[in-house]
Amino acid sequence: MNDFSDSRSAAVDQRARWAGLRGPGVPPRPLDARALAALAANPGCGRRAVLDAAGVDKGAVARALGSPERFGQSQFAFARGNAFEARVKADGCAELLRLLGAAEGETADLPDLAAAGPEGRVARTRLALQEATAARRWTLLDHPLLVLEVAGAPVHLEPDAVAVRPDGGWTVVEVKSFPVLDGVADPVKVGAAARQAAVYVLALERLDASAPRPDVLLVCPKDFSNVPTAELVDVRRQLAVTRRQLARMTKVERIAATLPEGTTFDVTRERPPGELAEAVEAVPAAYAPECLDSCELAYHCRDRARERGAVEALGRSVRGELGTLTTVERLLAAAYGDRDGRDSRDGAEDERDGDGRDVDPAAVALRRAAALRAEALGREASCR
Image: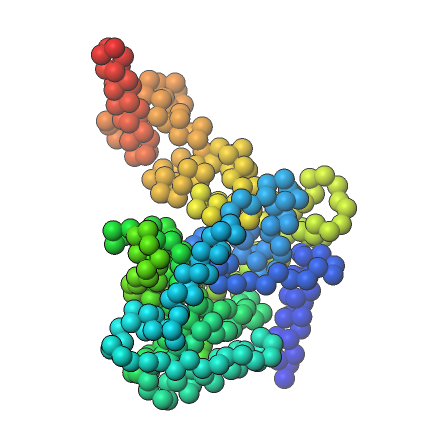
């Protein structure tokens, strides 16, 4: 009994802490599959994890900081996407059923998932999945509503469709409007779609761990037409990453506990200039250029990274290759001369400098690259 009381008290205290970070009377901004997928794409960012767990409106914070987000779909893109999805699901989802691999002439049950409120829709979806699995025939659930608990709060998720196969397996269907050109789609967009679909699969696993298939059906327009084409995408890796990130979300309270007393991201009240920026900077971030497509605070974080000269602003792959060279200043010093001012071409190919001291392998590579660049530029100038 005491353990139950303690856990309930801790949950109440945590909710109060999240409310304090949002500000008095500010309602929490609900998470969705896109937000959870973005968390999985950058699991090292404590800033996003804390603000999302607290339900802070990151877009409002970014605007207050003077660095508003610049991503999103146009109304034309929304209309095009809705029209394409309608085509995929036309005539009793006949085209979608074909893309799923059903035999010619087969039909699918299309249960009515309407219900009062999100809780009613979640319950109706759960019942429809149970009935379809028991029926052992093709069933297509159009925009079912799932629920996933994240950091102690329910998150409602709405996939484009979930197909129940005659063998009892469940397949998540993601309909996207980006094209597949000559059999190849944009890998960045495919990766984002796979992460989003993995969130839906994870929510389905909470209903029946064995029923959801680890491969999701990604449906896109073929070439420059509106004709749908599809491919099964294996999301097991994305599932593993999402599980780890959601487990980590339960630990973000430790990060929140380290923030200075009175820290808040409330943008609805008057506050001294710079106070909001200080509150944001108090939470550690892990900026990468990919954040620009998915996080409202990305432009603010990019500006701060550039001010510090952090190599993260150049990309994760570059950062991973540079080892201990964590700033652009150190990178340039390694490429064009060491701390003693020695010319970068001296001993560029050696693992040790002239005094026998160890040289960072990244620095050796940079010196070599600088020498090759200078040589190439010299040849170009002489050719002129």
